[in-house]
Image (cartoon, rainbow, N blue to C red):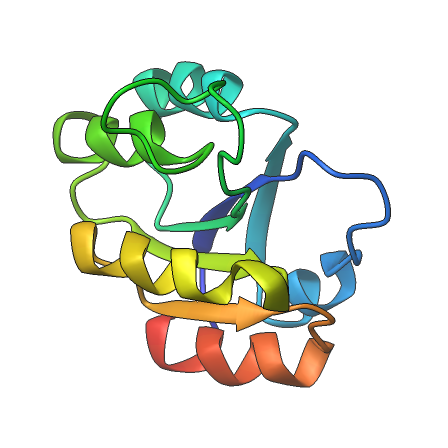
Length: 128
């Protein structure tokens, strides 16, 4: 069906494993556990898709204009992976911040936890 690559940015334990879905759709998955490592991977090769966890910066961990853990990654995309399609997963309690983030950056979808395989497949199919 597809021959796309997907970069998963998984920071939290308990994240659902979608490897079977990616295999079914013939998507090659690469996993990292931080946006910093994701940027390092982008510099080596640009993925077609990015699936990342959105974590709102409640504290001052994200200084200045940054809203969440993914800002710097998103600022890197035009240079390293301008064609990459981005899907984020967020907690319901952070949905308003995820929508604010989507106003700043182009996203294909915001999925709210818990995410089912069917929900992700519905988002992925038009992108592959």
